[in-house]
Image (cartoon, rainbow, N blue to C red):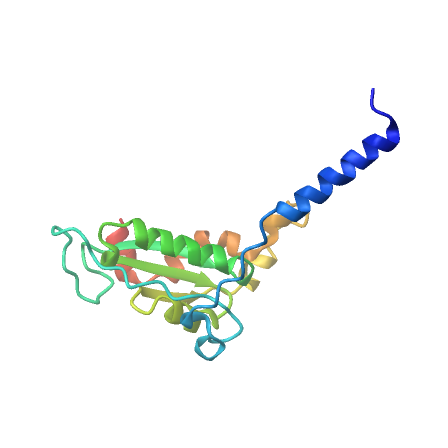
Length: 173
């Protein structure tokens, strides 16, 4: 058995050795050009991804019209609290799609200031922002409902036929 004073000395030597020989933390990476303050709109700090192009030879070449038969329509809500998640989802959709130029995103938001941000982050994205008035739904939400479901944009999908353009509705059926 080792006496307690000797044990405490051994522990102190062991801890000192760990601190002396442990690697130093890596230095912070310098910011990229895309995130410099002069190139950022509003108060958001996002980097622009590269432009996504069709990789398949059989991807139909489509015109800018949203109602082309080969267009894939995706509707998403856009909320300030979950903006980073939405941007990550859009990036993932474009990155993993064989024909990203054939995707048309319909963003439903209760804040019209999101459109310049989407245009800034995804300049070549075919999209449209639709304003959803939260007052339409607020009075219909039960106060006893779970807190996360109190946000009006959770119910925007029920109003999609009234929000989207007729051409998008016809091509999605």
